[in-house]
Image (tube, rainbow, N blue to C red; front, side, top):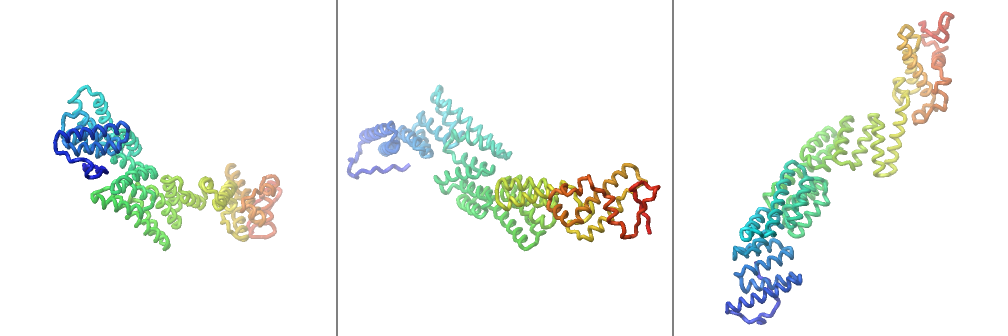
Length: 497
């Protein structure tokens, strides 16, 4: 290590050529360094130990003292160099080996640390500090093994757990910090991962691993253009960085395919958009946020193609990936509305409105709740077999057809069970016609209002036979009704003219 310049005049100290005088001067610098060290003025201690080394560069203890000072200044790599130089000069320098081992530990090299502590124990078998530090090195190695296994199994929480414990020992190990940050990113804990990577880059702006992690966070947050910039920068620093290379390739491919799909959708080419989003989803299963958007985009294209059930599944997949994704809830709710799954639609709109209390979301929720309420009543349109936009003539024709189909006289020879069912249907047809043929009642029914107050459908004064007579009686139509004495009262039969 280069000596630190001391701000003194060139001629302030006489040139000493006598080796004994140099030794005495070096000892003096060392004593001054010790004094500053004991006062915790480590910067000044460093300066005086450096002057001692300059005066006597072959004295192991001076390097050892400066190593101890550098450790207090948290300059562990420089401290390691000094410790290694100390034991090169004196292989029996126990404190030198001990400090070398501690530096290796702090820097995350457990195997090298263990070798240093073993050397101390050869020199002094009962050294309790070396014994304890050696056990710590073994523990560190075990956390490394567990972390490697966890990463291989994609158990990223386990890796973070191991790295937290490893960093409690190896606080200066960038490798452990990077592995933790990468796993935090893979777990979606982007701010934490960014913080760790940024701390490293403040100390070393060319650290390719930290640049890669920064890019990874941006990539997983769907900021793909910015992510690519970091991946490219990491590859400039380390051209062989395989993870950065793969991530960069995936990021570019994902963006290109997604953009193609978006353009196809804008051009109303929904089949092509659907296929392109499908292809994009195969590129990187780990990119949760982008894939959630791709699922939602594909759902939108699927809805345009009338693939409503597939669209619902895609929205569900998007929500599984990102349960805060409002667009996916809204898209799924609309698909539920279109497939008359009103309870599910209400549930999704309630989730949206709880998250974002806008007037638009409130209106959507109210509409879904109304449709749900309406769905729980008898569907008079289905009873008559007509659409909701049926004309007055279509309503009459439908009633004529259904009333004749279910009239009790037509089923007089059937079993009692069938007669009962047909009588029920006949009554429902009458109810439906009573409501849908009356413009005021129809409007109220369509708007979801209760009709019990009208007294038309509560079963008290409603008589389906009266409606039948009113509709068919006196108008011909190819049928006549006979109520001869031998016929049961109110029991009509068809007589074709």
